[in-house]
Image (tube, rainbow, N blue to C red; front, side):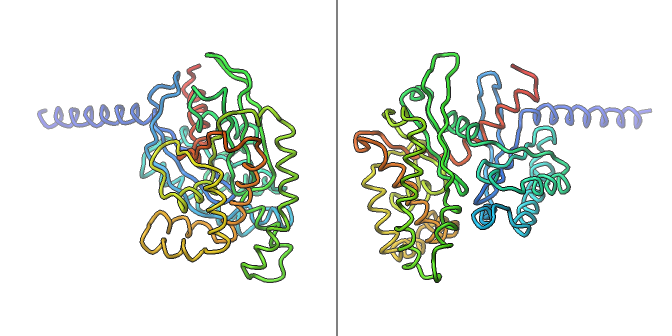
Length: 358
């Protein structure tokens, strides 16, 4: 009888611990974003859903240049789809089995840059087959809105715009009407990102030499300027904003290589800094290669992006900034957490629906 009582006590203890663990994990959510340049994983603890309160528990990336094929024939290459879905499946298992996030709280999404491909269904089907999860794509407008919510302090919403230079495209936007309850968002988008611009330039090159790439990149600038002018022309109010918050891999690379690893959530810089960085990038790249030998953050950038990708990202950054009137009188910021802002915002928003709290 004593043994039986002990047995039931142990069962009750295990059940109670399991229940507490389950309740605790109901507040943990994870997102896997399939982006143009890489696959990003984030795990967040949502502690106050109604107010959007959350802490980032973990974040990591794996490089897969999925958008390369889009500039070639408009499709994602099957080899890249296979590689990406393998990375997604492995990280999905890690999030579920090792970190302990419940299945209903794991979301898999595709970025707007990848969504530009004609054969996205092949990726959706492969993700479903390898994980059992449905994935959806975020369009540039929704991605820009989420970027704004994640990249700009609420007090600055009305006076700011945000731009994110991704691998497949550039997106962002601004708030024109704002009150304490809600705001109206106006999107901005450009169909060039670090990878897609690089591939467009490579089509015009005769060899793999960096000098040839530089020459052709310079020749592509009028086209880029024309498209950036059209982007701003569609929403001219953007040019009146006093603050510009920048995010994305190209901006992270610029800030890290030129100023060192970002220490603040919002890190101020000037157009002159970008111009100086661009000159070093194109004419004295060895300087960054030497820094990488002793600086782990610089090494991380150079392992993520080749010189050609960095040049393309810098060209987009420069053209986007130079097209803004009175740019030297504006406040420019690199949003440190911008690379995961839209994904965190998406997961936080979806978590409200999962928990049915509105």
